[in-house]
Length: 430
Image (tube, rainbow, N blue to C red; front, side, top):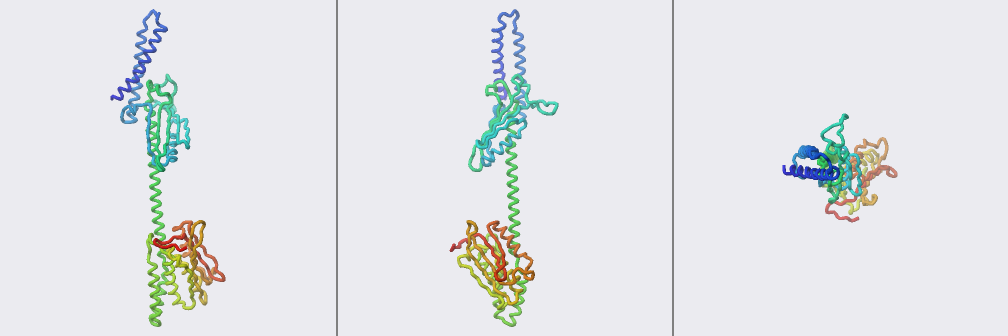
């Protein structure tokens, strides 16, 4: 109530002061020798002026109360200032405030300078109390008719506040000079502009947060699917190998108990290294090599002299992290599709070397054989190799590679290249 009274008194005082100056000037200049006293006309003019001012101020106060919900010196002011903190870096905050201003109803001129992080705009001052025949609000209110069509203006300045925040200083004011506030009201249009920009920023920040939350949920879901897929691929163990090994051990227990015991020992070693691993417990080249040896030792008992093994893996590379079961897949392919179908069998080579992959140190592990090679009779379904490629993509992206080529003079050589990373507690010997 006090703010409204003070606002009304200030405007009424300013207009009455101008009116007194006007009447004194007219009386002294033009009416000194008038035959009739013009006092009655001056009183009528003063009364009309007071009614005009009072009605305009009353409309302004009611409009502000509707927009802001309360009336005080801040909301009644024609010139509104806001300090808005945006939780984005300065460039993103600038883009956000620029878009919010451009979408204001009545924005006719918008000038933005991204380097200086400033936005200036001119906005038509809409008459909130009337509509034209075409449904559009007229640009000038009756209160401003003596001064012609007027506009509001907006100045927004973004100040960087660290790497992840920007502070926006927003000024919404009439286009005229500050002294015009003594005589004119804006019917809450600048208050409405400031509130509209604040709401637009809040909505855009909330929308950005919703998108980020959705992306986080999507990433978490994709990660869970990836882990599940990796676990499924890890869990692929050749069931026929297990059945055949147990069947062979059963036969050997009658004819050669010592070899049966050796085969079961190798099977235990193989299964121990084939237990499922958690995502935080990666395997190493050394551990994968032990699994492959146990597998090949079992097959050597079954295949006899038809299978030979040559291993060339430096001790310095045995502690390097390596995907679980991948070496095993390559060894199984070499046996199943290369050496078992070949009369007389052959040799499996397992090699490991430290190499450069671009600017990054990497380790290449090769499994080669001198079996039947790329023939229609020697080929399989390719599921194992597709799994190798897919697991490498999921685990390393473009940082790993897989290749398979013909070996000379016969057979196949498959190579997996992964980044050189030692298991925690390992020592780099390269």
